[in-house]
Length: 388
Image 1 (cartoon, rainbow, N blue to C red):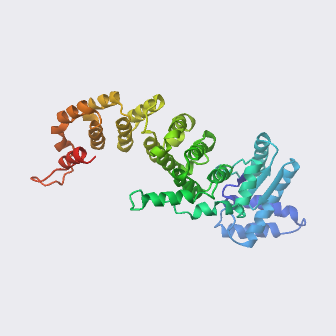
Image 2 (image 1 turned 180 degrees about the horizontal axis):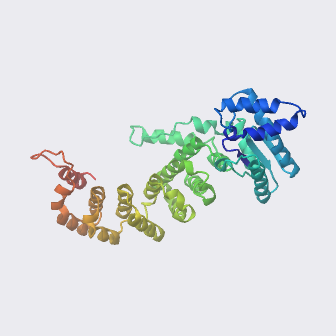
Image 3 (image 1 turned 135 degrees about the horizontal axis):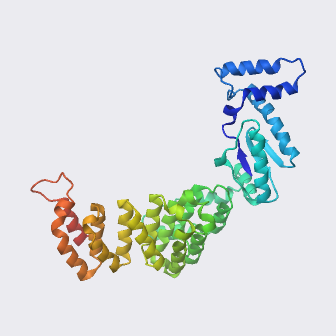
């Protein structure tokens, strides 16, 4: 168990510190009173707080912590402390919570409290990896991956050659091993995870699928949450590539589990947009229900537009007809995505475009088009029919 004291120096109570110092000296010593008066002047009359940075304050802080340290030892707890940072060594999670309770009560006796946001439980292996990372060990394994430039331009003149060269660069890098290392850390390296996300499209299909399985495992999603966008971009790059068709079903099954296993990760709008982009390649019953629910409950035009894009890509005729009847309630952004979607619904889509065309000029007006010149609506319609 790792934890620390909340605003330690600021919350030290002068009179309690005075009592601790008095216990250290002779009966007629005035040191405790002198220290209390000096601190009171430094704190502008307040009875709390030590000045941060000075060696004297550091010694006084250690004096303050001595009875708390003894209380932990008396309770039979194995502990280590550096200033206000504690590490409690316990044989089980149950014992860890008991030890934390003892520490919390010992601190409360002196007007101090734990910092909940910095309290974590680590298994022995996690702690070993954490210490090794702090000491700089184990970095050699990821150096090669860190140094690779994985930005690939599919439109370059030598795209195929560059792609094969990047694939070959992974011959000596065990990406799964590196991902397993990150999985075991209490704080995974976001840059390594970003590199792994970029590396997915350069792996063999079975390897890519296994990496996706680790990245999207419900047990790992919370640990990897800071790298969500990189992970979903990597999964998207695999799912969008026909060379990985053999593992599409496996990746789709993994993606379908996310709303049930980690719904909180889909609450931020950006996270949800990345997820919607990754699931638009194929419809499943789970995705159909999820996208319908998101569209109906979201107030974000960007999210709603992404939902319409899913229906467009699947294609979902029932949802298309439902949207057509809600045309007046759609925002201009949503209307434009629906207009694009209409092009994928054959004769029905053409008929819908014909019926709605007259309303576009006013609905999509930007407000700065010339009175007698081209309008934005006209440009968009022409682009959608000839280019999109």
